[in-house]
Structures are given as structure tokens and as C-alpha cells.
Length: 275
Image 1 (cartoon, rainbow, N blue to C red):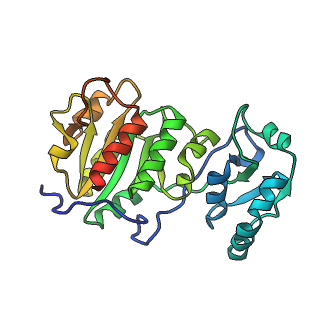
Image 2 (image 1 turned 180 degrees about the vertical axis):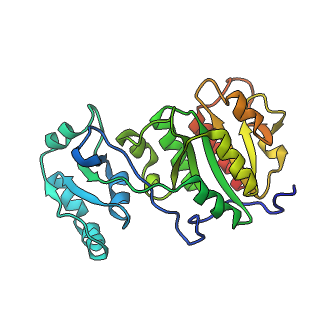
């Protein structure tokens, strides 16, 4: 392939440093001033450990506060964090959607400034190999969160979603991401096709995952800078998105099931690219 001779998962920030940049997370109800409530141990602790995240309030039950004490003292020594507020579980329940599992922890945070497609394209162009995930109108926040988690686990550079027809950064999305929103850029793009073209100019190959792809992902032997594009639940890739892919590839399935959940498909495909 002319765009790159190398293969392998990316590692670290778009600017080439060791760790990927932190991202925003979600909100349950709508706090004043544009903040978001995070809930659950993984999401909250990842936010607390992120120096770029502004934490306004931290609520904890007495039990959670005891467990939090030692690691929180170390975090507060590194950057400014609010004093934890010990509250009853019912008070946290009141702030979150019905049935939310918060494990006795909730944090009111400000959103972080998101990276842009230009920044991601420049970062990718500076590397011999990189993986970017593009979710084409995937609307379920749990699926987007799970895709973020897998993308972070397998060293992707970023996850891209369209401005429209993609979920807001809610508490549900953040919990499904299990801290990945703080570690991996979630980038919103105005136009999916235009974003793919910009990434092509930066040296990326575009691989769309489709059940009718002529080759499996392994058979395609993709290398270098790769954008893995996954379509909406049930509908798959849109026509214009398919037309702008360099490759249409599939996962080797037995036929016992027509398809995988999009987040499961993303995890399998990312593993194959990383392998």
C-alpha cells in the first residue's frame, strides 16, 4: 500500500507523548453552568486523576469516602480538587437518573475542550501507524461508551462521531466507557465524509466494516494508518460512507447470527488490527 508500509496500533497522545489526552464525560440531569454529573468508581476516579478535568463537587457515601481517602489524598497533592462531601446514598440517587449504579460516588465536572479533526489528522500524519475509530450514526450511548473503552484498550488514537445522530456525553456513556472518556479523544465532526477525506489526505486508509465485505479484516492485511468505520446498529454503513471507504471488510462469522452488536464488533476488529 502506498500510504504506509508499516502496521501496528498507535500508542499515546495525538502529539506523540506517552498517554492519550483526556476527554469529556457525561451528565445525568442538567446542572447549572454546563457541568455534568459522573457516577461510579471507574468514571469518577479517572476524572479525579485527570489534571485537565475541572471537578466542581465530589459526593461520597461514608463507606465510599473511607475507601477513597488514601488515593484521593495523593491526587489532591498533585492538582486542585474539592473537599469530598459525605452524603447519604439517597442524595446521590436524587441527582442521577433512576436506576443509575453509582457505587456511592458522584462528581460534578466541567466538560473538557475536545480535540478537532484537524488535530487528529495532523497527529496521525506524523506517525507510521495509527488506528482511528469512526462511528457512523451509532446512537446508543452504551455502545459508544463500550467502543471508547475498546478503542482505548487497543491503543486507538481517537474515536470520531458525527455532530448529529450521535449521543451526548451522558453519565450512561461515561459509565460504559469505564474511564476511557478521560484517556481518549472523543471527537465530533460536522460531516463524516469530509472527515474521511481529510484523513485520507493525512495518509490514512479507510476500512468500513460491513457484513457483505468481500474479504475478512485479516485477509485485507491492512497496514499503516487505518480508520475503522462502523455503522449504526441494524442499518450498518450509510451509502455515502461506504463509497468513501478504500476497503469494505467483514469479520469471519459462522452464519449462526447475522451480526454482532456494534461495540462487540469494534472490539474484535480492533484486536485484529492490533494483533
